Length: 75
Image (cartoon, rainbow, N blue to C red; front, side, top):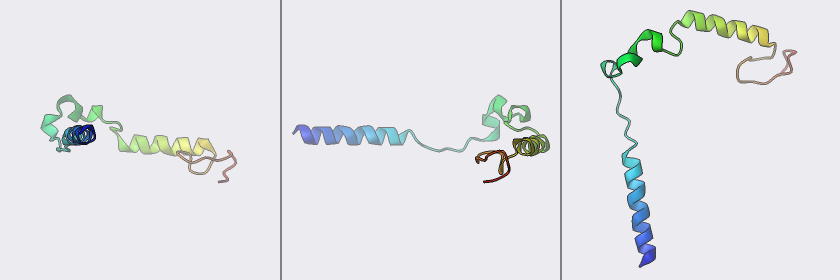
């Protein structure tokens, strides 16, 4: 009896946790202050591209961001 009870409790808990994982898209007017352009991670794409270019140029390793290298440009 306790084995079936544990299984039932585990199923109910799993169903409850999975029910809270709904992915409803958020509309722009629902975001409030976060919808403003100055709140974006990269509000200016040209500036972020320039910063990435400068960082990878100064890094010296191949890839610059996310890949390792010895600083000599080799993989």
